[in-house]
Length: 62
Image 1: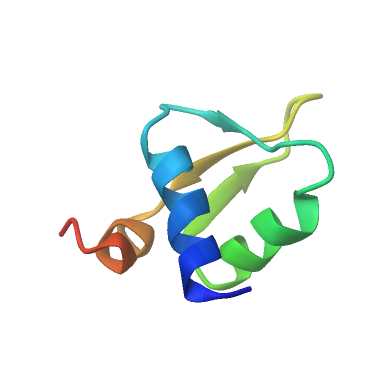
Image 2: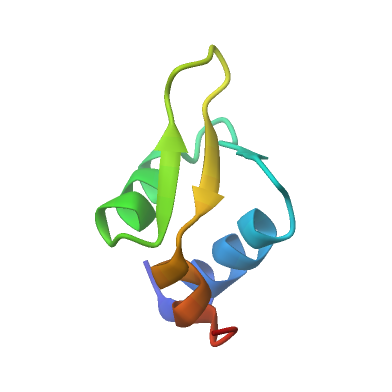
């Protein structure tokens, strides 16, 4: 995933308290999670994600 794609997804996730994992984008979200930028909550039927402190730093909002 390119940096611009990562930043775009992180900005969407950061604007929401709990961002739903969009259908068909599980792979992208899992890549962000493997980078430590988000945490995916897989406890519910509809997965959601939250930005981590590392994700906020990646956006430059630290």
